[in-house]
Each structure stands twice: as structure tokens, then as C-alpha cells.
Length: 291
Image 1 (tube, rainbow, N blue to C red):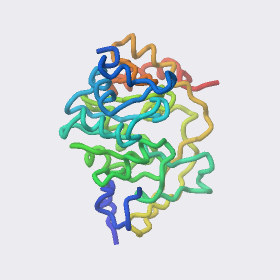
Image 2 (cartoon, rainbow, N blue to C red):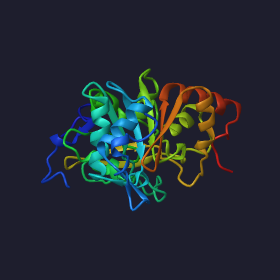
Image 3 (cartoon, rainbow, N blue to C red):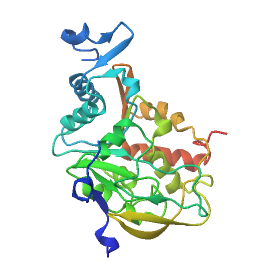
Image 4 (cartoon, rainbow, N blue to C red):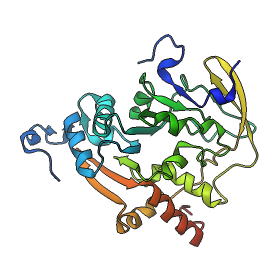
């Protein structure tokens, strides 16, 4: 029998499982090889590391990464090359997090989620799905909005997510990151419309369109043992316009951008991002809602 306070987050390498399953320009001496057929850029781990460093990510950084592998162009080594580049830049003192979301529009209190942190795949892309399967990854326990992390503070950032009544509250990795002075959001080939931490802001502000009514009696499967927990669910289908905040973040000096291969890449300071967006929501509770 498992005690809830013993199940804060799941180090994938420790669970029983038969197998884990599977410069503002390019560096000159690689420029000639940076294009395949003059249409698709060939992106290497080195070029990714160089671009992230140029952007401002550094040793000891803590960053939540939203990404699109295909928007880079052709990445030699695929998702693993991107992950290795991220971990190489932040080093052993830093932490990388990725959203490993599993919720969908079919969920409701009448149709509650079932979540196994080892076996439930995420739908957030090749990079997060590859990342969460690494032996040193720790995946937070939440039925719809889990996060996987690798690094010095991975356990601290993920361990309390099981306590979250709403998906992105103060116990969640999103809320914890937003309170850190050294926390960043990194958008690789995507924009703010996939920035899950914006839901944390909506929960702080108490907007009226974000959550479904009532509680879902959700099932968590931890190493074969079922645990029932009650959670409030995200209201799917309410269209957002998170990208409206991008120009504000640039003006306030908390967002920087570069290009790696075909991907536009943005680094945003998480704490002031949340503070500024909360200020905007207080002035206009529908500023993030796409009418």
C-alpha cells in the first residue's frame, strides 16, 4: 500500500517496467552544411547549444521548454539531440522541465481521467515524449497536466503536483517555477499560445472560463497500485490568445529571441511574465480569451 506523501513525483528509472521504450548567425564553418537541398536546414546539437547560449540560457538555469521538433528543420539525432543540447547548456546545477500533458476534451467529472506516469504517453510532441522516458527523468503526478524534469531541482519542482486541486496551481511545477528568480520559459519553434504557465496565471486571477464545474474522481496508477484523487479539470475548447502578451514581454525587457535552423526561439523570465500577465488580467479578465 502506498502513502500519498510517498508519491510526490515519479523517477522513471526507479519504477518497475520491462523496458523504458524506446553570434546572431550560424557559425561560419558550418554554414555551408546548414542547408539540405537549399530548403531544409540541417541542425546539429552544436548549433542548438550555440543558439541557446546566445539567447541567454546558461549553466544553472531552470527552464520549462515548449517545443516543436519539426519546426527546426532536419535535426541530426532527432529529439535526443535537442534534449542533450538543453542539458548540456544548463549543466548539472540546472534543471530542464517539459510539459507531458495528457488531458483532452473528452474528460469531465462524468468521464474522469486515468493516469499512469510511466505508461501514459503525452501529446505535447516528440521532444517531451522522448524526454519523459529517460532514466533520470522525474514526472510529476497529475492526471492531465504532468511535467517531466531532469536536473538539480527536478524533485523539488515536481514532487507536490499530486496535491494540486487545479492543474496549474501553486503546488504545480508551473506555480513553483513562477516564484523562482531564476525560472525561465523557453519556446522552441512555438509561440505563447502553447505556454502552459499562462494557465497558472488564469488560475491565480480566477477567470470564469478556465475550469469545469465540480470534481473529477481521477484514477492514478502508481507502479500497479490504483489511487483515487479528486481534481478539478481544465475546460477544453475555450480558445486562448496568449500570444497577445508577447509584445508586452519584449517591451518590458523580459523576453529575448533568436533563430535556430527554421525555428524562432524565445526565452522569457517566468516570474515577471506571470506578474505582468496578472496585472493585465486584473484590468481586463478576458485579455487572454479569444472571442
